[in-house]
Amino acid sequence: MSAHRPRGFTLIELLVVIAIIAVLIALLLPAVQQAREAARRSQCKNNLKQWGLAMHNYHDTAGVFPFALTNTKRHTWLPGMWPFIDQAPLYNKYNFSTDFWLPPNIITNSFNSPCGTFLPLYYCPSDPSSNLGNGDVYWRTVSNYVVNFSNVPVGGSMTASATYKKGPFGMGGFTNQVAPQSTRMNDFTDGTSVTLLMSEAAAKADVFNDDVLGPGAMFQTINTPNTPATISLVYSTSNNNQRAASSVHTGGVHALMGDGSVRFFSNNINLGVWQALGSINGGETVGEL
Image (cartoon, helix red, strand yellow):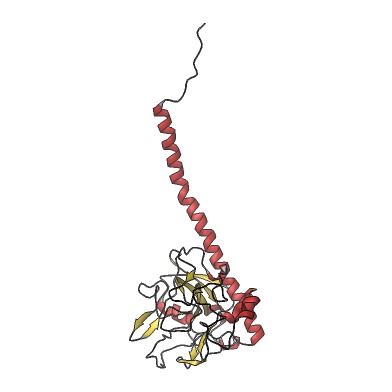
């Protein structure tokens, strides 16, 4: 009796199987990517919630929210927040009696300093760009999270205007970096649940730098989220600079509200509503969000 040879795959059958597997991978890949982005968006939202908790704990301790920036000695809001995000050792190393760019706050050509320390809470996990900014010799980290200056631009030719609405952060009299604005919880007469405290910045912000002529530690509500030409760098009009809230998430931005909640706002939000959300005491009616 002749031996029976087992039948194997023909070349055509093998190619069909490979094609089927390729199709299945092509169908599954977008779903996997969407799941990953959903997880990253959730982490970004949680980061802002942690900043909200830290802001409120700071207020409970100091009686005010942190100042946004000052150039008496050049600092921003971020170093004062370190004890409230479990980074007391960085706070203890930082010298508030000198400028942010001097030792020990920053070590030239080195990230071995308080301002050069990488912290995941600084960053939106959906943003693939570099987490470290070293465009000059004063190497420091950058961040995707910035504070709300309402509809008030900043710049060399800044003058106070009756059209400006007070935000939770800003400069004294809208223009005075020497005497930065101090804001208390009871100043939120519009309501904390309808006032923006922080938002995202798609192009990571130079959050340790008080220089208002660069892409620094704040955003404005002059334009709606992700408005082109106002997101990557500070957008200049007659030296009055602004930076829109922005993100790498599709369709809008996450924003931290004064009551500590985090909401996602569409790029298509009405500009009047967005600007009303930017002020703490403008008396506007925001309506149902």
